[in-house]
Length: 136
Image 1 (cartoon, rainbow, N blue to C red):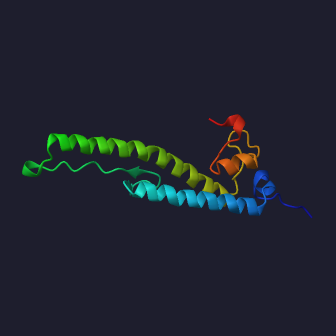
Image 2: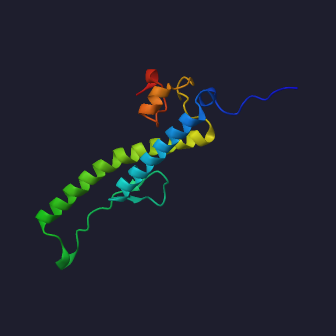
């Protein structure tokens, strides 16, 4: 009788289910916070699952046009929101990928060397995709 190899990577097998469950809870909580923060000023792009868009300011037209000083303030606020959007969106995508790896069985494995990522690193950053040696 031949025993088939286990479908999960070694790193997932080494990590106990309790630890994996706690890390998943952390990721889900962070995902909810990131989505709430992004939703406060941006909208999800309907054409992309991973992209958010900060609406451009309404400048009005004709007699409803915005005075130049107000227009400058609106565009400054827009630039500030866009600069907030990018890191939040990047982190949300990292967290979403980590949750996918948990579901697919590849969580906790360095994407470069394929060795287990130390549990301490995952506890500090549950979305980590590499061990410290290969961290960017």
